[in-house]
Length: 376
Image (cartoon, rainbow, N blue to C red; front, side):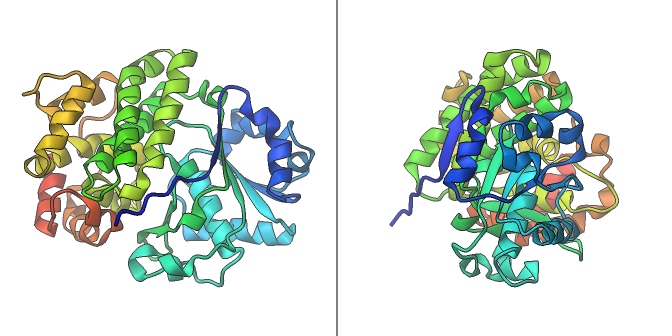
């Protein structure tokens, strides 16, 4: 049996944030907490959203979202939520504010500690429909968290774990490409490669879900056709719209599961000695993982080449590496400042990560170590 579920309410298009007052009312949210970060606020995006609803103008705002959301930040935002008697959340930003809001929505309605609900610790069935309503407003085009059932949060002991359940999917994804027009080129590139990676990894997952696979291929085609345009000219409205759709489609396919790229990027993102952007990590790791998985997914690799318009014998990993270079992202982990000394610990953590289960080729700690070494 294949379980196929789609998914949540999505409003997509330029100017969609103008209707958020009615959206809040429709969800029964009268006292929202806004979760964003300082960069989004400094860009004027929080204020731009607030002007469209009276409840948002008077809402408490949490801006202390780290690059990789932490348990400490979830608890701080939860305290603000409770202090103001909030009854829902509006998450504005990339994957970090959206994932943080999901953590708050969970703990606002479920007894802690947060670790109780981690997927690899048996937490999935413990997350119920009581989760507080979340409206997700993405300001980047990459993470897909606005329609994703997972939140990635680093616990106090340093473990970056996935919290996964259908009830964590935001009740509304409000996708307005206008909000991405000011993204800098490097962030456009990094988040865009996150979307590319999501589409590729979910397509390659061995779990059965043909609708998700069709969506993943369409998202991949849109992303590779428009990412270079969006990086070169951030005011290109068509490219911004297509990249936001590609990111949304990558998120819509998460239920197939990801793979070895994310099994590695999750623990790497939890490192305390260096702050690593998730999308950039995925871009750097993807070629080595594609080479590792190639023997186990030949037919799907052929379909990806056809989707990208490549020759039947094209080296897919090399093509991806070339794309990463053209959009100006780092070529390897060394350029990102990752010390080689972390390889054994990251490889062991990758084996335990929930994304390992849906990689098309089984991977051991030694395999993960080899993929990491190939990425330096």
